[in-house]
Amino acid sequence: HHHHHHTSSSLHHHCHHHHTLTFTPQMLAKNTTTSPPPPPAAAAYPPYWGTPTTTHNECESDYTVSPYVGEFMNTISNAMFIFVSLYGIVTTLCLRRSLSVSTRRRVLMMWSSIALVGICSGIYHLVLHFLWLDSGMICIALVCMSYHYLTPLNKTTPQTKLHTILLLSAGGLSIVLLSTVIFRATPTAWPSYMFAFGLAGWSIGRRVFLTYRWNPNNFPKVLVVLSLSLTLLGPLLMALDEMYCSLHWSFSYPYFHAFWHVVAAVLF
Image (cartoon, rainbow, N blue to C red; front, top):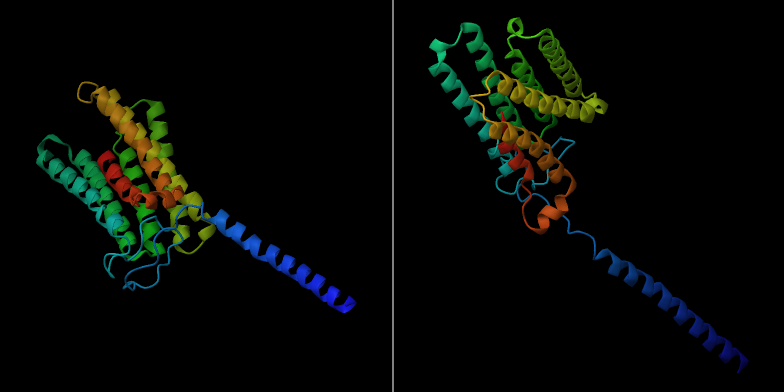
């Protein structure tokens, strides 16, 4: 009888112990259902260009439209840079008689560097390889330098001249930093990208300011406000793509980065 009592009490203890073990995972499972939905699963097609080597992937899913296109919307949105560039090149050539050779060369260099941004960025989003991401950033730095190269140094105040030389030097430094990243000195990658983007924002803001100061009648204030608003909107769209990817998927719009391409092209 004593032995039976001992067995039943240990059985009761065992059941109670078992109950507490099964209860805890249920609680954990209940808590995990409140987390944001993950992005859709993996690629629909095998990547034709090989496994992506980029250390930085945007919100849009990879290889979901074609085995030849890594991020479809992010790739085709780069066409906007090329359209803008072609418009600028054709306009400049149409006006060639009213522009000096030096001015024409500077302006054509600027439009060509904008086309390079679209080409390098488009190839990057197509193949998702690290080298092309970095090449696109170098092209952005080239655009910045071409913007400052537009400033006629012999016709400006000493302050503007100094500011222009400093910004040209910053553009050169940015290209050097980005070039070291290509040779896999990756610790400098993220600071180099931030430096290039910061330089781009400053360069565009300064170009808007100088254009307004030199041609107030041909450059209405509404255009100044629009340009500066787009300068702020671009980085915001990139940040949204980076930080709130799971939120985008909840309303099926993972294309903020592609939208940024369009905004940046219009701004250029």
